[in-house]
Length: 248
Image (cartoon, rainbow, N blue to C red; front, side, top):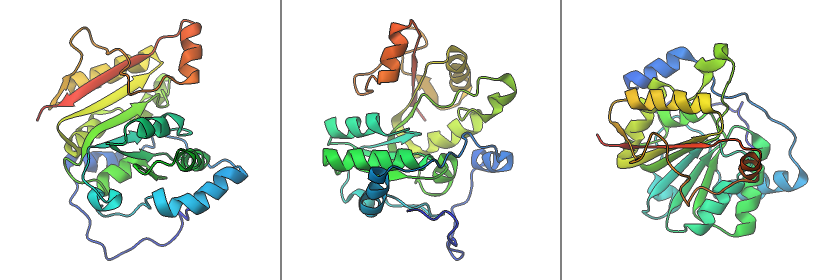
């Protein structure tokens, strides 16, 4: 299991923070609610057996992803993968890509590790930590080919909109981690959040909307259709995909 209260190294040189990273640190607003939950026996077993193989412990220093995966390949990072079913499926059908998943819900991490072990995939690594701090400290500039943010907490009450992860400071920091030509792919089933995402991304420097027809994209084949989404379609609920490309 992960001991988040373990002492952190104190003699590690930390990368200098950019202005967006400094702004995020000043705000200190969590874009998630930490939900520890109770692990099933299968999830606990997966955490014990698979974390040493597929887990990446948080550390306030840059990591070498070529060393982590023991190869050079395009890299896809997903923020908030839930129970991990879709992430495991994507990694399974695209072995030529390396996948990194970040999730703060421990049972979700356990379920993802359990699914990855059952699928016998080797191109997936997971983290159990705040994504903002991972981006701040662990990811090198231009190290990612795609960042995925699927169905994040919409914080639908107006007074909670400041907690939405898609904010100017965050997407600017994220841009520096994407390669030129890399993509930030968002999906939500809340129309108001889709409009918020679109407004933030249209104003963000260095990005261009990848959609050639309208503001939103059809669901790409690589994003699995979840049972929740299928149910939403049957009930007439909309889902909005946005993909923005880093151009500079």
